[in-house]
Each structure stands twice: as structure tokens, then as C-alpha cells.
Length: 502
View 1 (cartoon, rainbow, N blue to C red):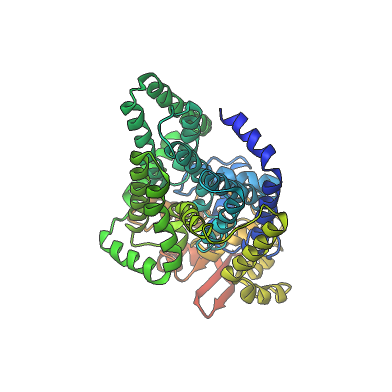
View 2 (view 1 turned 90 degrees about the vertical axis):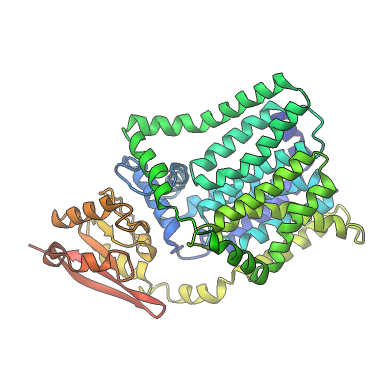
């Protein structure tokens, strides 16, 4: 059973888990812009998640009253962070610590299946560093998904290590919960579970465990329902279930662009520019199963999982480094292979002093990798002066007693909602990167907001999809006046407009 197994492991490895918790806190404190060390996380994605989460927990219904086309669960996660700290990202930072601690813990216990404790600690310290190279500023949807993947990955490895024992139904319950949570954040990443689950079912069939096969299927369905029922119930009660399907499923299916010609370019780029990281992944995908997994069907399923994730992530012409995070889960098995090799030549003792030394080395590597300090030292020095967009615009907006805001782009403007504490009062208060022909309703509704003077302030970015349209809109020029402009050498200007006084 999973619960007794967890209790036994916590008791046995209490000191190591405390060490990993300290490591997680320190690593994120220095290497995530969710951390209170940094004045502000300006990344548009996390500000979008936070402010839709804020809208939800202030009574606005997701999709019908607060719009975005991503999965619902990421907004509820950020909404919980908002409840902990509603003036910034500290609440999300605490959730991030919990997630990364689980990540390090799963890496440790996955490694512990194949190597001694003192070497498994090295895997647990090294694995977060390879993920860190793709986390951008922290808090991405892919980052939270990786926490769910890590739990299932450990259970997959535990079963595929031998494969001759009955598959516990509780494992399948966890897989149902983890895959459903992922589905409700980002659709395509749920493919991570397809081949390993199929391998489990095939193994049960080969072993003629028909009764156990049926029970595993039922437990998986139960796990999915545990996650789906509360979310669907929320949407149904608020008459948003149909709209949620149309936006999250239908719109994303139409919006997705498949460009297979980019695959070989992206593969070359990984081998050319991320060669150390990618080689570690390939070791974990292809060499690790041969050396360590007796269940050959399971071993093949893991290789197929990496391939399908890599292909899915790289099919779109749009690419950001954090998209790759889901297949970086194989960094765990890659480091296991490396440590297995090193263990033949280097003898480590089970010593807290040695572990602490490696912990400090890992933190310094993480800090060097993110290189925030070369940038943020300047931000901190000038933080009292409103030179950055969020500070500059927020100072003006903050002079009003109950301001309302519409961001007609995305990017840096999203952070103004967070900084000022504005609760969105309209459905399309932020403009995701959806071109007009994909979803005309958004721009049409925003036009009505302007014509009806429903918002006091508007941010317009010259690089946004609809800049030309709104800048030439008669009602926009009649009712609003420009009160400030933010310029920067690396991108086009942002303009802040205010409703004219009658």
C-alpha cells in the first residue's frame, strides 16, 4: 500500500528529506523570480495565471467572466497562491517549494530503487539543476505538471524494475489523479502516461491477471474522477461547462499549428546548444532501461514516451525553452546512469557533511545557471524609481481610488494587474496571443468595452496583434487619452491610456 510505504520511507530517510527541503528552499530563493529576493516577476504568463486565479477567488467565473484558453487547474493553483498572499507571488512561491521538494524527493526515491542512498542523494541534488535550465523565471504551467509527472515516474520505475509482481491498484489510482491534473493544465503533455499505462495493462494481460487488470482500470478511472468531478462541478454550477469545452478543447485544437519540418531543426539545436543536458536525457531514455529494467515492455514504453513528448513539444513553430520541461523528467534516469558509473570508482560515505557540501555546490551551480544577479542587481538598485513598465504605469494607476484596467496586449502589461491589486471587472481584461481569425469574439468584445467606457485605463503595446486596429478605432481616440509611454531599447513602446474626464 502506498501510505504505509510513504510513512516508512519518511521515518527511514528523515534527515535526507530535511536536507532536500533546505536545498529546495535555498535553490528557489535564489533561482526563481517568485522568490521574495526579487522585486517582481515580470513574466507575462505567471501574471496572467495569477490574475485569473485572483478573479476566480473574487467571484468571477473562469472562461465566461475571466478568459484565457489554458486549462482550468493552473488558475486554481495560482488562486490558492493568491489566497496565501494577495499582493504578490509569495503564496505561489510557497506552492513552488512544495512542488520542487516533491520533485527532489521523487528523484531520490527513484534513484534509491537502483543505487545506494549516498549516491541517490546526488541524483536528487543534480536533477533540479537540469530542470532549472528551462524554467524561465519560475512558475510555468509545465513546471507544475512536472511535479505530477515525477510522482507517476517513480511508480512506473518501481513496477518496471521487475514487472513480475501484481501491479498495485493504488499505483493506478495515483496515475489517474496525476494524468487528470495534467490534462486540466496542458492537453498534449498527458501523452506522458499513454505508453507506460499501456505497458502495464499489456503486462497484466500477459501474466493473465484479468481480475487485477479490471481493478486497475477501475482505480485509474476513479483517480481521474477525483480530479475531474470538482472542476466540472464548479464549471457546471456556474453555467460554464460548455464554454470551457469550446475554449479549452475546441479552440486549442483549431489554434494548434503542426509544423513537422521543425523537428529535425529542434533536434539539431538540442544536440548543438544543449548537448550536455540532452546527452543526459538520452542516457536516461535508452541506456537506463537496458541496464536496469527487467520489464522489457515497460522499458520500451519509456523510450516511446520520450519520443512522443519530444515530437509533440517540437511540432509547433512557436517554441519557448520551458516547453521542453515535460521530457526533462528523464534527467532522473540519466543521472542514475551517470552515478552508477561513478560509483564504480568513487566511494561515498553516508555523511551529512558530504551531503551538505554537495548541496552548496548544487546551489552555486543553480545561481550561476540562472544569472539573475547580473540583471537584478540593477533592478534592485533602481527599484525606488519607477523606470520599469510595471512600476511606471502602476504609480499612475495607483493614484485612483478604484481603478479598472484593460491590457490589449500581453507581455509586460499583465504585471500591472498584480502590482496594483486590480481585480478584473471584464471578461477579456488580458489579451492572450490569439489572432483575430482564430477567435474574433475577444477583440469584438474589447471594442465594446471601449465604446461603452467600461474601463478607466488601457495598456496598448505597439507589437500586439491588434495594435493597428485599436490605435485607429474612433471610440478609442474619442474617449481615451494617452497619459504615459514606456520605452525600452529591446522592444516597441507600451502606451498607457486613461478615460477622458467629462
